[in-house]
Length: 405
Image 1: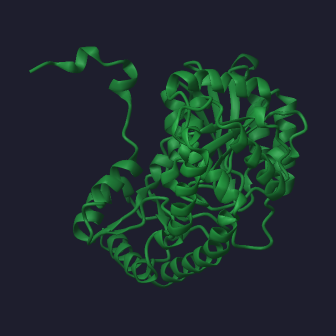
Image 2: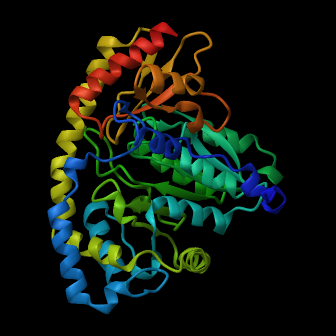
């Protein structure tokens, strides 16, 4: 047998598995397990008939264009359509040359890490934050600094103080601030308008970039939430905006996008050339037609009330069954509830196998969302994928796990 260990790179040796991806692989074979693990859209909301018609139409109408290679940035017509949609929905004014179509927003995070990060550079994030972003940045060699959240999002006063107290040589290593300002994953909170403005002021004062990850702003349930994007407020072109079709149309299309300055877009394009040449042409054109035909708007018209109802069901079940020493978020949008279990020596990561095998319920351990080693007593719970009955039953099973451990 060949010993492959000497051939692996340091990255391959040290890389850790994504807990979400590993979990989904396990529980996909365990139909008796109620899964709160993935950020998976409700299958009943996927517009299967519409996308089937669009796919057939795109192949017949565009012919070889739909089935051939395309330019690395993405099909120009798709980028034009996307800019028009984002201006209409998010007041984001972009030129097609400022847009790079990516293979989902996870690919965008990886590309941004490759473009900006050298080993030892610093990235500031919310804490907790999206675990796959943490992975992408760390794989590129970044050291992460976490800023706590409250119900109004990232505490920008703490951010400013942290930057003020940094030695100048350390501050020079900060490449960007990564944030999910609207319906944050995993906490479900949104940044207030004042804090958004303050964040941009801080970025300007210290000459920093801001990476705005925006997968959930279309899925906000509460009317009093500010849904202004940082990109729409950006006067200095400091914000690199990430979006995705995964939560609003179909994750299987694997289409996301990055909007930035033309200079940054060119750097991302050059790196992407050597990563995957370009994102799938057919999927790009399907997205474009889905926008033009109003399919996304139809999906959202169904998704928002349904996800709101599922959120309310999970919160009601948690209130009814979880013990009082559990704190949990009341998300204003998105797909998740985040919970901290304030019980001595409670470790959600160590208990996961027991939860799956004995209690037949799955969650994502919350430690993976923290950049500082904390959060072992926390978990992220998805409410978009399970049925209403599964939400109630799954919460009861989790409550038993928490109480009996």
